[in-house]
Length: 390
Image 1 (spheres, one colour):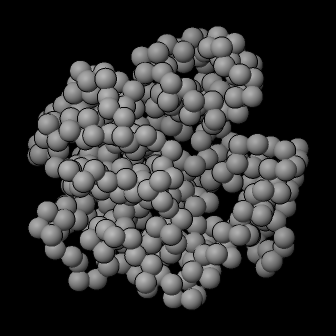
Image 2: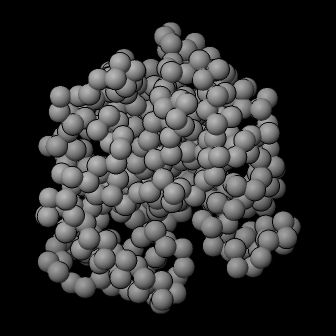
């Protein structure tokens, strides 16, 4: 196993050193898919550069004048997926960039609470509708997909600190033991023998064998129905273990209803987490309307908020969301539809390493850059928001 260690600087606890070594030995945990020595070098060089730039941005006071045109009107909205007890352990078999440990998540919240008024999405929506701004900079916390570990690890922290939040739920999986389709696909692609079969069957180049790169390629190329058939065939020969399934379990309706009673906003994330830009118009309408109706039947109240799976949307999808009756919808980039700004509200997705410096420690300077959109660009989004759906 190739180990690429970061320079030692106040190494800290044995646990911290363990995490650094494990992450460095697997560049995928640090956001890199390649496992070569060059990738290790790139990890360190990019991490050092990012740390230095973020520090200069914050210390110089540049954040006081660095404002994008809509930053003053739209609060910072942080997006998360899974909250786990041990990031390193959980990242061994699942997508690392979907994970944040409870300890790091609490650190994020503490940083946000010192600088922002943490508000609900209903509050943000009301202010945006009325064209009003918050007296103090505001921020919100959201979670996509409705994983049970958010209930187990994030909800107690939010409740203890009195912080509002929102959870976007995949209704077709809620109350089942079935993991998300892309989680199941990633587990299959993490098995070398299955990757070879997928590449051969679909006629894909051998260089696309990295699990995350291949996952992204398949999600972009094929509709949900085709992906489900591929996963079912692969799992027939190599079924996931019970432990793997349990780790990815969705929330139950009891969990969701309890969180809603405690002030957590519940929104829709479609019925089955389809990537809407890959589906037919009829399929899009069914996913949007079905999930909304299911949530409203369980919660006994209107559901106004929607989050686009993987942030994938275009003008036709935005129009379908409006027709389905949602008042607010959220992306994961800075793209806005000028016709429907309330249905393309930007968020920033964060994970365990999102605000870590080159030495694996939490960096307020890097978090500050994320909050101000310093690392982001409307032109850098990997999705094509201009294409029209079928």
